[in-house]
Image 1 (cartoon, rainbow, N blue to C red):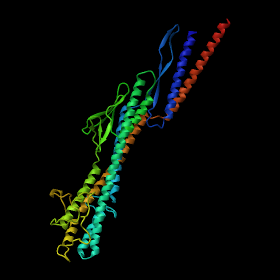
Image 2 (image 1 turned 60 degrees about the vertical axis):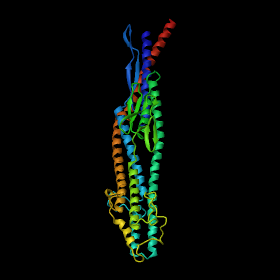
Image 3 (image 1 turned 180 degrees about the vertical axis):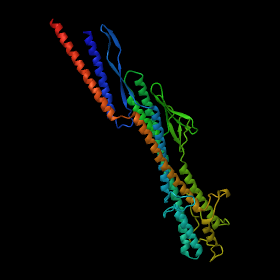
Image 4 (image 1 turned 90 degrees about the vertical axis):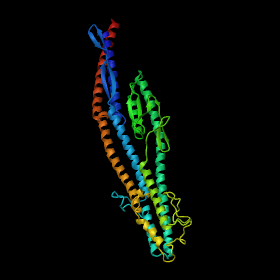
Length: 459
């Protein structure tokens, strides 16, 4: 009878093992479209054997469940995802900056090209201003022409200020986005720390498996990598240490075990980690370079036009306000009107001053000689516009190329960690049949025991 009870016990353990295998397979199938899920596999292992009168007998089966997760591929997916997110963020900013200029920018724009103009852009305003001055020089006694000069000069200053405001809004929006992202990043770091704690508890106790928590943590880590480049190192109890690099390329630990040891902060547009703060090296180079170029252009126009219009530096005799030497502050001299606009110092018919101002359009400047820009006014602005156009083109190409790389790596990981529906359906049928077979054995042994007990009690 002990042999029958032994068979009954081992068969019961086999039923439990096959039932767990079916549950694991069903869970795999239900997560076939879950990108954070890693395929789980079942490994059957015999329990300890015992010595009986009939020899060694197995006490049943046990089941261990493992994930088909590749730590190297996971890290590569995080790295490529981080690069893609970074390039996409750059693309968004430079595209917004390009739109802020109000110019039609073509791929062939160069520093000397004129294919960056539009009727409503700054380029058109620069051209219209100097054209108006040239027309005024041709007919200095015509009040309509003097009025046109003042009007076009006002349009020019307005365009400079509007473009500067647009770019400032883009930059402010980018900074606000980073501030929001910092909050999100710190929240994700806290989630990783909490999951580390839960995973560690489960893997160092008999309370169950942590595999689904590992999947959840990997999903959080990949979200985190979308905001900040991170490296992940797994500890002996399954906890992940998360680190990034500072502006000098040194590693900065963000999460250790169940604690966020160095949260992220934002100060004056730069990211920092920990206390005392360690700079993480984030830059908005393209945007700042464009604004600097526009400031230099505005400064050169103000300086050159004033020098041509008021060569002696007479107080109150400037064309532009000498204090307004940036794109955001350029303005006409407060005392200038169409009525007191000077065509030349020689009275009626003298147009020497107007010709000098008109000549600024073709004047070649050089930073080597102390000027604010290189080339003509038009060339300088075309260069700035072409620069942002090239930045947009570069960003677009980078996003396209990096997205392709990320797709390749993600697909490679999916081939290792992803769920194959065909394989899972095949396994499910196998486990169900094994369960059915074990169930039939259990039923036969149970019937035998019932018959035996009946015979014994009736004897």
